[in-house]
Length: 278
Image (tube, rainbow, N blue to C red; front, side, top):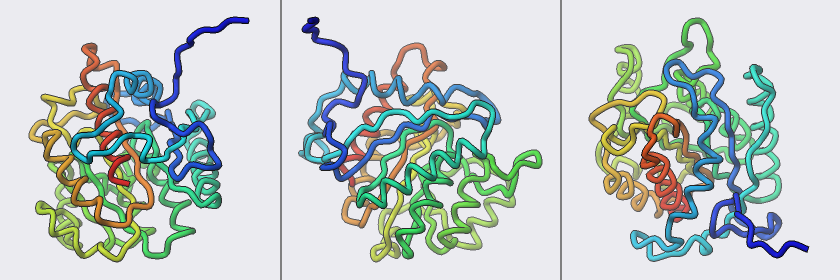
C-alpha cells in the first residue's frame, strides 16, 4: 500500500469533518456571463493550491485558520452553458448549508454566483444586509438584454434585502444611472463608521477582488485602476469583525491573466483574513 504523502487539494487548516464545522467553504467555478475577460472559473482550484504557500497564522487577527473551524467542501460541478441551472445548483447547496446550521464562505467564479447565495440565505435571515466590496457598481437591471449578469448581481440582490440594507465600498466604475442609484439610497460609503447603521443586521460580505488596485490585482476579469491596497481592505474587515457576519464570498480572480501567480496569492490571503473576520 502506498504511504505518500500525497498533495492535499483542500484549503490548509480546514476541519475535515463537515458535521462539526461552523463555516463551509464552497467553490463555485462559474463564469458564464463574464462581459470582458473570462477565466474566473479556474480560480477556486488555483486558490486552494496557493493556500499551501500561506502561513496558517494571521498577524492582523492573532488567530490561526484552525480557529475559524471551516470545512472545505470542494468545487460544485455545473452544466456548461446553462446559467439558470448553474445558479440553481448554488442556491440548493447554500440552502442546505444553512439548514445544517452553518455559514457559507463562497469562492468564485464570477460575481453572479452571489445572487443565488443571497436568495438562499434570505430564507433564514429576515434582517439580511450586504456589504459589497468592488470596483464596479453592479447595479444594472440587465446587460445587453440579460438580467442574469455579473453586471446586475448587486441590483437584483438588493431587491431581496432592500437597498437600505446595502453598503458599497471601493466603487469607481459604472454607468451614470448606477451612480445616481447609489446616491439615491446612500449605498456608497468611504469611512468605517458609515457601516454602523448595520450593527443590528445579519451581514453577508461579498468581495470582488477588482476592488483592489491593479498594481496588486491584475489577474481579474475587469481590472480597474485606482483601487484599495491590501491593508486598507483588511482594515475594513477588522472593523466588520465586530458585526454579525453570517456569510461571505470572494469572487472574480482570473488567475491566468497574471502569470506571476501574485494575484492568486493575494486572493488567497484576502480569503484567509475574511475567514478570520467571521
